[in-house]
Length: 405
Ligand SMILES: [Zn+2]
Ligand SMILES: [Zn+2]
Image (cartoon, rainbow, N blue to C red; front, top):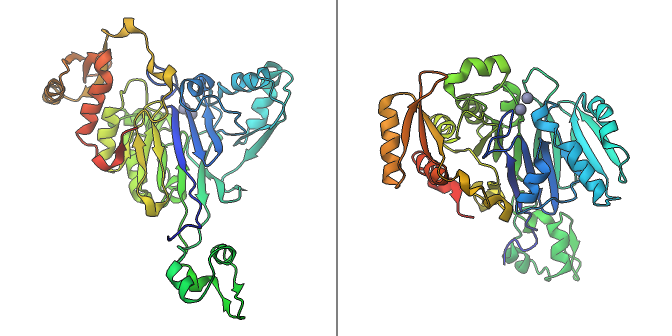
């Protein structure tokens, strides 16, 4: 069997909060859990994050590493409560290390009175763009973003892995199976019983690249993000707004879906995941706009996951509801007949097309004028919302990006 010496390390991201600024009925504010092997890295920790974790299939693990992209309330307010819960659970160790941009230490100075005494160690580590944390098989790098405040993005970059072990070559050279092959696989030469020296390059193929994940946090489209995310397997970029709110995106130093897609295209990433979606959007329209520029775009909802396999094992895939626990599925039955927005339409023709598409999916949609601007809102019964979003997204969704949970 080939490649038997390479350990397989699973890597996925659980989207715990995908809303911008404030929670909505369906989306919590920013939080993202990256799971790599047995490690759990939490990126941002908005209000309610510990409950999102409890509702997820993950549960609330004893998180040891938190990475804050910036200190806006919609990214950090969940932290004091989660740290208190760890204390109430009687945690004495391991400690929690909170990484964040310049200013994180000062924030915790203010939080101290709320936190009180914690029975476990809490360390604060401030990072600047370019700082690197070596973590064995991978490194984490902070990179510059453009959000008008002290803010950083994070890169996870795995080290190259040894090449594929060529069993036939090893057999031909007389390398016995067992310990010697492990040594060669690890990159060291071995001396055989007859005195022959076999070097790793005789039995190993070319080194195989690891995975690269980029997480921006809040940012306007920025050359520093393009550079950092270059050829990443997955770029998680904010897309607070759609094209129609481009002006607002400029004023608030956020990105539109199209801008994020342009960043992904220039960075030549394999997949773009858009998050931090303004409460005025449902998600489908953000996906449609971005895919016009960059086809491999997904807009995860809360509790969706993205699996990122080693490159030779395939492309990253969105798993809808892949991180949902029992609690995430239960919802208020009284809300079932309410009409909720599933999309915005630029004009009547587009609205009618959406209505017809939804009718084909067995969903009766209504259209009403948007009071805030001259667009149209497409509404569906809340209990059909998920199906309606799926139907709309399927319009432009490349099949191979999506997997069933
Ligand atoms: Zn934000
Ligand atoms: Zn922000």
